[in-house]
Amino acid sequence: MLAYTLIEKKQKGESLTKDEIRFLVKGFLKKEIPAYQMSAFLMAVYFKGMDAAEIAAYIDVILNSGKRVRFTDKNAYYVDKHSTGGVGDKISLILAPLAMASGRVRVPMISGRGLGHSGGTLDKLESIPGFRTDLSLSEFRRQTDAIGCALIGQTADLCPADKELYALRDVTATVRSVPLICGSILSKKIAEGIRGLVLDVKTGNGAFISEYSKSRELAENLKYFGEAYGLAVRPVLTDMNQPLGEKIGNWLEVEESLDVLKGGGPADVRELSLVLTTQMLSLADPQAGEALIRRELEKLLNKGHAFEAFLKIAKAQGADIRYLENPERYRPARHIIQVKARREGTIAAIDTYQLGLDAIALGAGRTAITDKIDPRAGLVIHKHLGDKVRKGELLVTLHSAKKKSIESLAILIEQRFSISGEFTSKPPIVYEIL
Ligand code: URA
Image 1 (tube, rainbow, N blue to C red):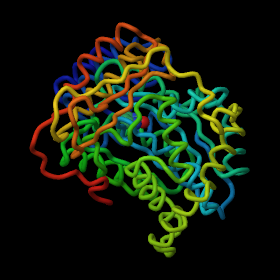
Image 2: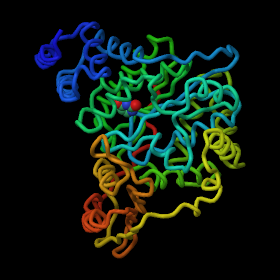
Image 3: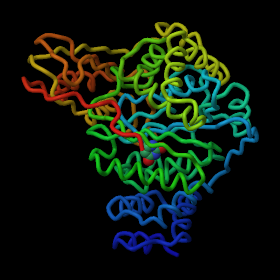
Image 4: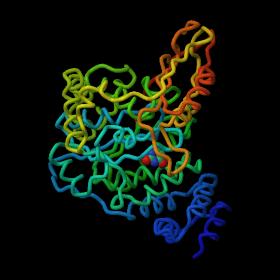
């Protein structure tokens, strides 16, 4: 087999066999197929798609590139949540300890790094000094059973093919593809050894898939292929036409998550955390009733029990929790610029995708595989859809170590907001639960 002919085959829109897909993915992982050929293949899939048999084969090959975790406690319900990616999406940092604090489920979570314009849970966790996301498989298993949750990334053992493909897609604009997203998300989640999976499928101008009908197609595919592996899958379609919460950037998002974990924080972040965690617990116990579960979760946030659970996870994974107990200890970014509105009106639209790219330009993400992330970089949005803004009022605060980038963005950033006299209605936080 030749990578060249398989790229050509996909380019013509023909279907590949499982052996051919295995040849490409394994060859890439063993470095026998170079990144430029794999990039060309991914781009061909991006344009031509994959049929159901190819998607199933692609998931399977990535899943079997590593080991699978097997939990042995038959009385425990292992469940997780994964997002298809958005801007300011810090929900996992809240939901995992919240679900753990309920004592109803165990959460073995494998997350990814920033991808395209969107942030990644792994980069956010690693902004916490000392936090180890590279636990071995046995540490991962042991910690999940001992305290109820562990948060790690893809490793050499677990879905190594996704780790490599993910990094390549991140820098080759090949993320927005239903089959590639299915392969990436489901392989990681099946490898975790879970029984239930809640999927936060984002839709809108800050999601990878912006059109509602396409996002729904992604949700349906994730459910179909996840269930084929015996998982209970619940996709939730949620809005991404504006950043989630106020803060975008790794440590900034940890700070905002801490506020929510202590019962405060922005209302949209709290609401979505409650909705998705409720779905996780209701997969574990369908008889419990969602209203009752939700009330229980609200209490865990308000009383600080979810925050305590987060400290417990962070401590178990080597973090210096003094920064979580007193976030003001964290040294801020070298440059901080407050940008004020030059016009007045109502925020009618926000270019969420571009704000994600702006965060990367400030240092919060990567533009090349080898880039180092600046954990302090990012932005704080002071106005959301439907908010009134007066001339001279604070619109955005920028944080960065890069003087040139922050200064040029300070001039441009107002363009990300359409400020007008007209505004119809705020989008809902949740559209549909499938
Ligand atoms: N999240 C993932 O883990 N993979 C994708 O491809 C997109 C979002």
